[in-house]
Length: 67
Image (tube, rainbow, N blue to C red; front, side):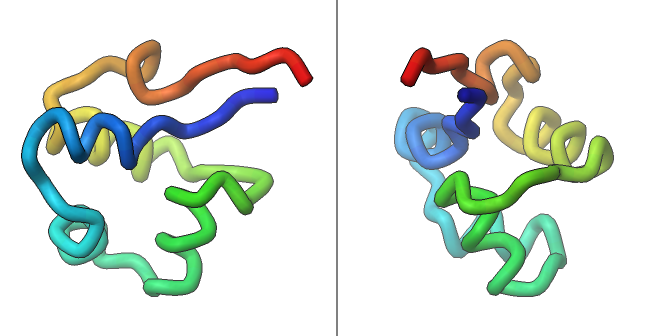
């Protein structure tokens, strides 16, 4: 299973979930599902924006877990 590690990256960078939500400009419902790994897909533009904002790579943004 692939998981988004955005909350961990936000904590490392000293940003809040609310800050990222405002930067992305998406609905709170969709944003919340995304950061809590409750969505089936994420737009490439959102991945790119998150990476630019958090100064990370997609490799750092995602984690593969075996369940």
